[in-house]
Structures are given as structure tokens and as C-alpha cells.
Image (cartoon, rainbow, N blue to C red; front, side):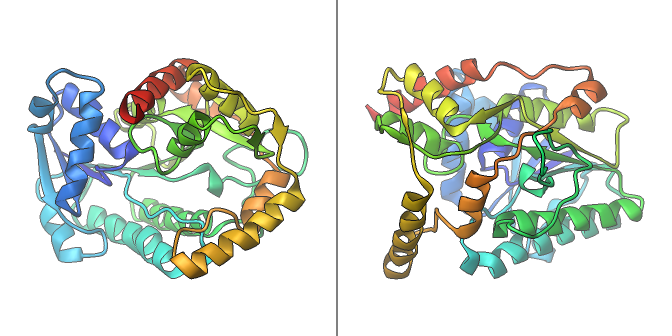
Length: 335
């Protein structure tokens, strides 16, 4: 049986969809009942009978910080997909990020070792891939440092160290480092915010860019890696390196909205950072603009995806079709 942590998130829910469609026996962790509704919604995007697929999942209420609940969840498990993580770029959230991302991953690794799990797939981020100081693409071997890294990337790097520790104790592991994952349903976080922003028809766009990949590619690659003889390797999952203007234009065009044409200046971003900090102090709303955010916009990194393409003899799918599909769903849910 396969275990999926973080089964109620973007990657986890799409992974569960693929696994159940392949008739894989699967168990998934959830923390609260309301999160399960989101999974059913994701399933409904792709099938006329989401309930039957959802019913195939053995759902277990557990927390990756609660070892007794995890030990129960690992009964009869042979393979583990670790998708659970806490995402925040707010420096004041560092302790919570470290607990969930590093300590939670350490718990998963330890229980995998104790239970003789055959293979672990850990979902990380391109934030743990080193930055290049030239125009060449960063790859899996580019050296990473904490300097200018955001709190999320730092704690995901610490999580990767826990996974490599497991590899040293004879646990077979694969790590995937996806870029910005394009997919539907989670409109208030991650790539969902791009769809939300594009729908408003703003004239301005942030400078810089990132690597982008579809959620279908991410989940298909994870499954392919777990079914392969590959282990103790990490892989960048990026289909295209795009500027933020380019991705917002793609989404705006698919929504028939005004396309952004004016780049935000860095002085405007710095003013926005102070306003963002003030709003956070007054309302407790999440931070969206920090020093590390602005540094990343000033110094964007592009990524090399050749390693996974060669390892699996595959090509990434075109981003445009996912953009159109997700945009259509966004419009239907917000009209």
C-alpha cells in the first residue's frame, strides 16, 4: 500500500487522483475534515464520478508532528510520497516552518526506516536549488546557500538534509524540486494567486521570473520515479523558465482580460514591503513582500531540466493547455 502525506494540497490531491485512477491501494493523511472537501472538488475537475475514486482512499487523520498517529498510519505501507509542508515567506513564521518542514520530515524519515519502507519520494522546491551568478541555468549540483534565501526555502533545505540522512541509513529516496506548479483549485495560494491577479486585469507586473511546471507533470514524474530503479537522486521539475510578465500574459489572454504591460519599479516594491509589514502587524495577514522576495525579483534564476528528461526519457507538457484548463475553471467558480 502507498501512503501520501499532504493529500489535501495541490500536489497531494492530484497525486491521489492519479493513483486511484491507476487502482493503486492508497492511504492518505488529513488533519481536518473540511480539507477533504477540497480533494473531492479537485477530483470533480477530471471525472464525472469523483465519489467512487475518493472512496478508494483509506483516509487517516494524522499530523506529521504527532508520532503515535503516524505510526498507526504506516501499518502495511511499502511506499511513501511526502507532500506535506507548511508554506510561508514570513520571517516571523520561521519556528513553525522549521517544526513542520524539518521536524515533520525527520519523523517521516524515521518511521520509514523503522518500518522498512521500500522507497520515499519527497516533494521539495526549486528554492533549495542554488542560484547562479551568470546567465547559465542552475542545475541539481549548483551550490545552495542560506544567504538571501526565504524562510520557506531554508526549512525545505533542512528537510532535504533529513531525507539524505535517511538515504545514509539505507532508505531509498528520490527528491523532486518543482518550480511554480500550475494547477486548478487552490486560488488563494501558490500559482492560484497568478490566476486571481490576472483576472483583475492589472496593468502592472512584478519584475523577475521563475521556473514553471504543470501539476500533471509533477505527479506523473513522481509516480514514474517511484516505479523506477532510480534512487538517492534529486530532480528539478521545470517545464519553462518564464518572466512573471510572460506567465501573467498567458493567463490574462486565456481569460480574455487586459494583459499587464508595465513593470513595477524596485522603489515601489520596497514601499510595498513596508506597507505589507504594517498590514501584517495590524491584521495578522500573511507577509507577501520581504527582503528575500525583492532580492529574488532582482536576481532571478533559470533552471536546467535535462536530468529528469534523460532519466525518464520524457518531455514536459506545454504550459498553455494547463493555463487554459485552469483559467476556465477559475472563471466558472468566480463568475
